[in-house]
Amino acid sequence: MTLFTRVTLNPMNPDVRKVVRSPEAVHAVVSAATSGSARPLWRLDGDRLYIVSDQLDTDRLEARLGKPVVNTLDYQLFLDKLQNGETRRFTLTATPVASKGGKRTPLRTPTGMHQWAERKLTQAGTTLDTLDVLNVHATRFNRQGRKLTFHTVEYTGTFTITDRNKLAQAMLAGVGHGKAYGLGLLLLF
Image (cartoon, rainbow, N blue to C red; front, side):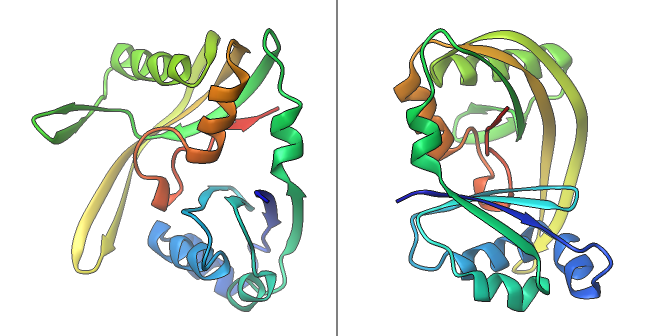
């Protein structure tokens, strides 16, 4: 069973503030709480942490995040209700890149970012109706002594579902690169 979990964090808790400062620290918390699961997807959005996983150990979440409010649902029930022809609002934080010769280059122009999102969402079984870029920023952190930088884009918009099975797969697998660090989780409203 695939789970969708919304964790409401207490930003006043010093342990929470320490964890949310680094994508690597959040990754470690999510990995510990979903140990044994296929690669989970997650996204930190303000004081909310969203997780898609096969299993979840809430005790491990609480140990690192100090008694958050945890709501978990059977994600497959939601995915099964998606219908072709349905229009949905979405949000996605991703790292749009172009790959050439095995090297990834961030797309930084508005046109490049828009085309990347349109291509990825079309591959995910949708037709893009509207697309807005809310925020573009670089996320930098150290991982095992190496400095990593993700050029992230926060997208929002609407699309029409053309292939509900492809969309469900994209929602389970994520969109783009950097999934281990909180990118690629497609949220629908």
